[in-house]
Image 1 (cartoon, rainbow, N blue to C red):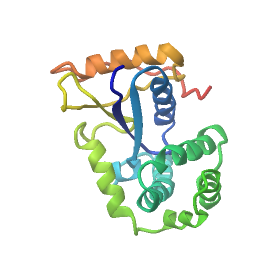
Image 2: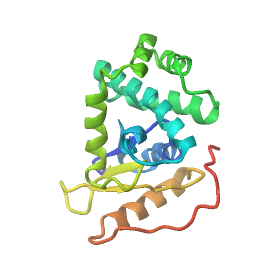
Image 3: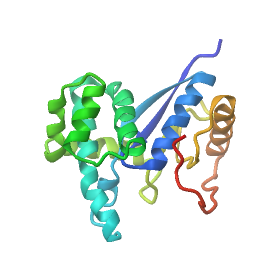
Image 4: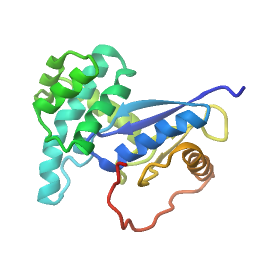
Length: 208
């Protein structure tokens, strides 16, 4: 039986495309010998100081809250807690269309059995240094001209992982279709000199 390998994904809870990718990765975990680990990046950190459209700037301002809550939970309970907390946050944000704010964070924390007082972190800079460190750990291998999702995966050379942005896909493939997409993504990402494969998006994220 093949030894299970670890795949790491960096997410921002507010990104719908990262949410779809994360649901795909959980499907991949069922059909390939892989274990998924989740880490926090921040679109608010990434775009700090950049000139962005006003509506997006408002989203980024609100976006500090959920990533700070995630980092506070990780610091108190360990990285493994992010898997369920991300699911709770994403379900409420993307499926439930719940407004970003303290009530959402309290509800999500309660969903996964964590202290709702961790929601206080949303309005505090206490964990920002740790947030930036987590963000940089994910983004450094892929650069800052991409957002989330970012994935670090085992590469073709043992001990030398490959890192990439994406895939951006909707809806999330299920079952063996999820596994085949994974096989192809890892194949191209592990090819020396391969950088980009892209086409214009003509669909909004689908969460079905």
